[in-house]
Length: 407
Length: 162
Image (tube, rainbow over all chains, first blue to last red; front, top):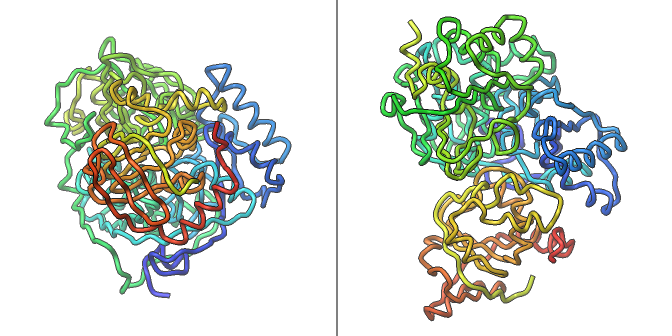
């Protein structure tokens, strides 16, 4: 049929309802743990363990007795049902990106809102809650309303001081936090040098923070290269030339300047708030914490140490990235500059693990949400930024433009 | 679900997010703990308005953010049966329907009531009555697809009301 990528993969026009088979189902310790009792009450039959992945990343490892008990319950379930488990190996969405089952046209359902990250590979990936997780766990299928798509064309030459984070923040500023609600953000990379897979993952990660059901990059040579290196199946999927979009947006990436999402939810240029004092920097999460982000940190920390009394927390998104960052000397550079490096996990991002901030603190974070209290105290403030901007800020001790550090 | 839902209004704004509704530190398998976390990310004035069976009115994008289903559980444990908003975020919408929580999309929902107004929602004929202000508002029935899901969830009793 003729249509957008989503309409073609789901085989049905937008706004129709479909029941589709799921290629990979993900749940983690913060969501899958909710359904165990109901699973057994309902009869306790799993659809296909080879297509399920459980990840322990939120309580990794647990910091309280209650969380240890919750995780143990899921542990027992995973062992009894022989479900593949990733134990403290990294954040679920990064592990999905690294999984050969995920690629163009695959349908990935995850019990976590940021499952959209995986759209970087051209997959249709979306987040659901615990009950939907249970339904897929036992049936292998999910009902979806086929979303309309917004086509986002990225053109121009990406400046060295701009990362995927700035691109998605620019789009967030343009569309607002519900500007893509129930829709698919279909990205087309027509930039001169192409946008890296790591930046694409950042962009798709935050698609949900514009409300999107899917955020995906139209698969191209960069996707193909990634799939070839990682393993997994390639298939050509392109939208039809007469596909109908709800909206078309062209973004000239060379016109972008480094951006922040301020604590009030406004997207502002770094220049506008430069000099604002901060108390903590968080470099990690499923939004960032990838190899490209370590290259960015390395660029800045090779030449400059952290400002005194600034807490800087670095978390690689997966153990695989962690190991590579060690091999390349990036971890050493971060530590030499004065940062603390924690194990691959969600960390402080959602008010769960180490690195929470107290009353009156101001943090610049590379994560995806800065709702009040999201990273600790209701009286704290979080700015969201790219790794380059966050690293520059940690050196200055106040919000700083990364262009000062890049020649 | 009863055909007639009665309660006192709480009026919230746009983009009420997961952390306002239910901070992640209240994530738990203990119903009492989950129940106690509702609205704990909001200011104390709103926390004080909350009572068993409140009826929530809100603006755009209600429930945006995390997929944590404990948020819906916390709402149902507090016996809130209906939320009327301009729009809902999609994961919140699915989670609500899956647990038998009725959501009504209504333009300018926040103008229907002020805090503590007495509200009656009549599901079958589809009207919202503001008893305090003596006004009636007709709402369009839920898409039959979702109505069917909602009824199925109710029969299963996904979240056992305390």
